[in-house]
Image (cartoon, rainbow, N blue to C red; front, side, top):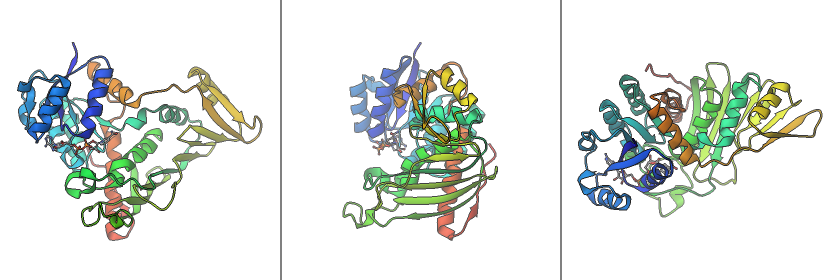
Length: 361
Ligand SMILES: NC(=O)c1ccc[n+]([C@@H]2O[C@H](COP(=O)([O-])OP(=O)(O)OC[C@H]3O[C@@H](n4cnc5c(N)ncnc54)[C@H](O)[C@@H]3O)[C@@H](O)[C@H]2O)c1
């Protein structure tokens, strides 16, 4: 029998959820909810959901026994309540990224998932890209040696999104929670979720506020940069922006004692193409192209599969639900992004490095 889904929030991203649920075998959308009835009705019509399963209250929707899982597609400030209510009602939850706008909200969500024993998966879709998955394997095999430094960066030269994304009331924060979540999460994920202990950061908002579309409206940051210390002694530099006078803030990479890896590609930098890496490359059916072939080596990997990350994340969610297993992206791991973001905002406010603490779950 198909996994029956109720969707909360029928704005922009719910359409991508619908596409993914209908592309991956094993799901059926059976109910929709939005605080604006017209929006919910329109979605129901588009997706062949009966009118009697259209709701303006997620609590009412959760009374339906015929719902197994809930997709939370509301803006960031409204992730916690439907997620916790759905988990408490015994439903599995797929919640859009970021996990939440605040550390308190994210912590409540992870605690509810643990207490309910249900799956909580956060939509950090780029974690399912072949380059991130392969980088994770290379690092887990110990091929880099201990990682002592990493950078996690991305920017849009101009790309402030507008809509509900620019208000604290709806989004909670700006570029850091909107696109920074991907970078933060994926760097932590490939490194095995090291525990952050200290953060020093700034967040700024100069360029968007000169734009008449955002002036006097936007109250979230467009830029953030942070220096994050981990319990294991490693450091990560994080940089993100919706708008900046640069084309690039650098990419994301990890430096280990024996080799380094750039997460896009991925491309590995080492002194030699070692046997463990050779074994891993062969077991994955890839080709490694050392360049130059001897001495100091740059290795590009060929043959990584083409993956639709939307379908990949929904497939992982389905498998976790059906096998009553664990999410590929454990919520306790994703929670670390909120621990760091909370440190970033506190550090910016106090203009000091701050201690961060991972909450007990
Ligand atoms: N994965 C991605 O590629 C991606 C892309 C864009 C947005 N997102 C994320 O998706 C989420 C939503 O973004 P969006 O662009 O769809 O926003 P949106 O503002 O278009 O849609 C949000 C919808 O939620 C509804 N809503 C708010 N509170 C509600 C509640 N309590 N109950 C029911 N409905 C409620 C709103 O009425 C609105 O229709 C955000 O968290 C965002 O970060 C993810």
